[in-house]
Length: 194
Image 1 (cartoon, one colour):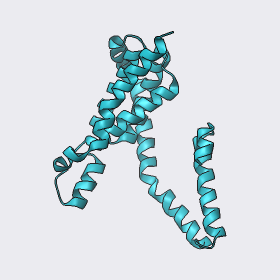
Image 2: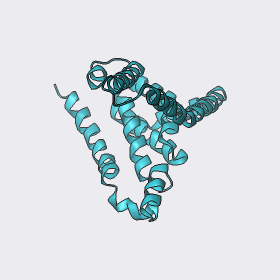
Image 3: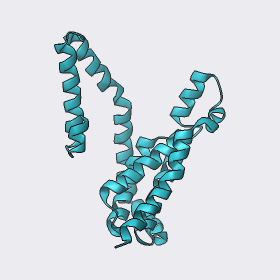
């Protein structure tokens, strides 16, 4: 799976290949009965129902927002403050961060910010892969830090503490949030030098 992903294979094909390969190995080695394999696939599909429903609703709302000029308004306001490639990257980070903080759901934030991010990236020469990385990273940073986000609420419930009590121990999202802007600045300036 990792090799095919690194070779640039389509993500849906990579995931399907990984699922089929793992089921085949499990059944072939006798560790996973065929009936249990089908049950596991069914359970996995059922667990995706919520996110699929949310994505469809968000896509519908986003279509209404776009049709009524909301995306253009947001683009104008984001682009007004954006100057150059570095500014576009910062604008993308701020945009997805704001949507994630507002929705407390990184998947929803990614789906909602996607069309605006694509336009900002195209206008300012940010590669699609880099824009996607920024979106993913900042959605993950805020999802890991929001005391009202699902991850912290679940962890707090499991540990019988408040979500705020966990904040000082969230090293990964804190370090990611602090180091990524530095990496973006350094990599942008290094590429400009001949």
